Figure 1 (cartoon, helix red, strand yellow):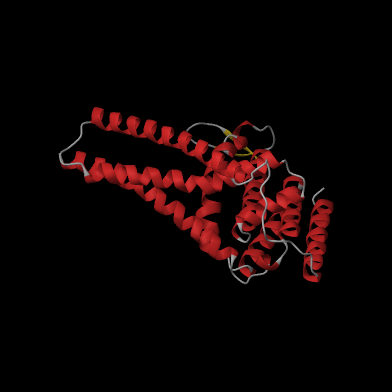
Figure 2 (figure 1 turned 90 degrees about the vertical axis):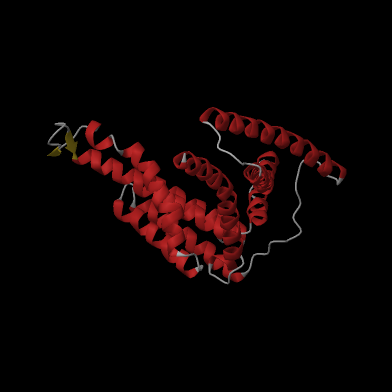
Length: 277
């Protein structure tokens, strides 16, 4: 019996704590975006173009040294922008390493090339070319993910969306991104309230079948609430003048510092493209 109670409460605790974790991540991003760091002072359009250029250079490079250099630049930018090193490790590098590592794991064994090691029990051959391919993939993804996270953490979300519109990204895509970010927290809040109310009404133990039934019913109710919320939000937007595009009151202005940073981004990107051929 105690094991069942622990498992039930563990599930409810994990479900409700996900909302708290999401809110903490959002608050940290907003706090970092308001900090007085290097990237925070750069115009969002310059920042977006520059970081995308660095990501493209990392993806196209064929040199370990160049990709590692771009990752070092990203880490330096994070330090100058007051982005915690622990945040990069916990939220970016570990997650990306686990995800990309699973994809890259077969490469050392299936890629033809110079055999440098044999697995003792399985008898599989590990090739030098396979290890290089896996290393390139992991390092590229780590570098690109770090740069993209820097963009999001050092720029308010509405500024990122406006920068995308300035760069002629379709308005529909920008609107979807904006609405998803804003109302994801409302859906999480609804889920949090549902689980809290369910937990407050639990007196006895639930069997495995009852727990599955409660989970399915909660998912159905949450989906119904989501559809109703989307319709209400769209009608409210139309009543307030929405005609397919979102306007932001903040105006961007290119300063001398932005031109210097744009030149630095361009110089590093061109050098990385040239040296990584």
